[in-house]
Image (cartoon, one colour):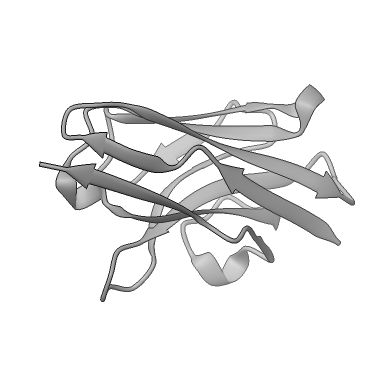
Length: 123
């Protein structure tokens, strides 16, 4: 079993930055891909980006490309989502997810999920 706990959400003005963290505990394997998804009020959950275990591969949704960066510190079992130049449309609950040995944007392929952290961007 793998447990994921997100932190770092909050309220920020448009144009500001936030860094989210996702702490991984439990049975951690070296081949987990880590991803971030988000869900805005009244909308379906959507893919934000992923990073491979080695960190060599990252991929982002077009809506966040160039503004968001995913990184990981495997020694500390933590994944980060650096969000810059935030926009009101980035307001959502952000979730981290773990999938074993996959590189995909499909949320059903990720077996483990955190509880989410709220990010609110004011205009």
